[in-house]
Structure formats: C-alpha cells, structure tokens
Length: 270
Image (cartoon, rainbow, N blue to C red; front, side):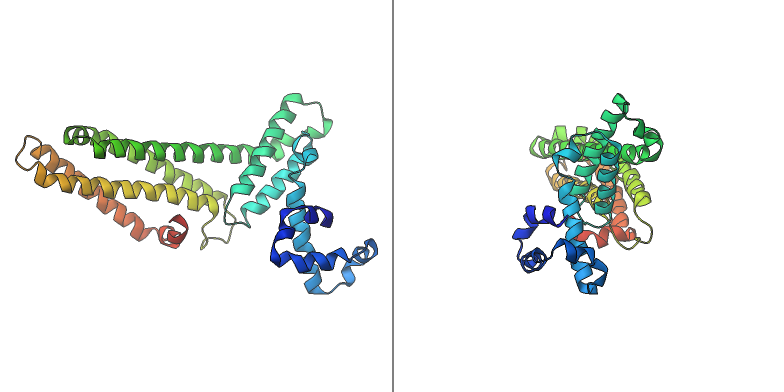
C-alpha cells in the first residue's frame, strides 16, 4: 500500500516529503509490529494507506475487470470521498467507473459471485448515475438559458418583451428541478451534517444562484426600457411585465433570506 503512495503524485508535495522518507526506512518487520507504534505514527501510516487506496483504484486491473470485488472497491472508495472531500469530482469519477463495470458485469452475468449484486450495490450505483445525469442536464439547461438571455438583451425591445414570458417559464422549470435535486442530495447526505453543505449541494445551489442573477438582470433590463418605451405602444405590456418581474425579484430575495444554506455557501458559489 505504501508503495502505491510512493508512485503517486502526492510524494511531490512538501508536506509529504519528510513522512515518505521516514516510512521508506520501515521494513516488513516494522509493519508487522504496527500496533507497537505510537499514536502519531498510526495516524501518518493510515493517512498514507488511504492515499494509496485511492491511487490503487486508478490501476488497470481495477478499472478493466468487471468483477464484483472491483465494483465494490470502487463504490466504497467513491462513497468515502463523497463524505470527506469538499469537491465531488473524484468521487463521481469512481462512481462512473463502478457503474460502467456494474453494467458490464450484469450483461455478462458469467461470474457466480455476482449473484445478489443488483439488490445490494446496484441501487446505490443507479442513484449515483441518475444524480450525475440530472446534474449534467441542469448545468446544460442553465448554460442554454444564459445564452438565450444574452441574445434577448442584445436584440431589440420587441423580441425581448414578447419572448420574456417563455423565458420566465424556462427559469421556473429549471428552478423547480434545482429544488427537487437539492432535496435529493440533502436526503442522500450523511446524518449529522445539517450545518455543512456538501459538494453536490453546493453545485446545485451554484446553478440555482445563476437563475437568481438572471432574474435580477432581467428586471434591470425592464427598468432600463421603462423610459425608452414610455410613450410607445409597448408601454402597457412593459408595465405588466415589470409588475410580474417585481414579484419574481421579491421571491428571489425571500429565497436567499430564508434559505440559510445559500448564505453559508456564498463563498463556495462565487
């Protein structure tokens, strides 16, 4: 396990240099008497072993063979990373690999050791894959909506005013997805972490905050058109849209005021 750490990129970090040098002096006999080591050495050894495990999960013999043991190993490491790292990038990478092996294993169904895999680890992997797909869909939808709004802002007033209602419908649809997704990731979070915001939660909040900013930007654009279109045929439509926009802005302000996880995650979402 320590050999795996020595082969990883971690050994290049200054914080690991002295520790690696110390453990290079350990022999097999030393590690056999692990219980006799002092507590701080236990901590160092276990930390290095944890890093070694993550490095080993990237090896070809783990990622290329659809065996039950490999699938369970990847899933276990992914779940540990989900609850120990602020960013979920590496955890989702291992979950995707595990899900790929899982699908290959289920399609082949030649390993007798795979019996019961669908009812044990299967649901976890399917939930992780569904969450990943939903996050990707939401990210794409927010990006597409931002592009649409940019085109509306640079176009003429006619296009902006008449396409704004459908744009609001898109905002509402994506916001509803964000709220549902946030409840899902909160439910799947570990117990006792109510005051902390995990990586997936931060990502959902970040995407939802972009919708809030779009709402504010749309309202500012309407306000800017008020003087420009005051004495035109668009004046009545503009007044109606401004009233609707004002209500939407107030809802956004209430959301940021009464949802503490938004303020707690402010630094993470900027």
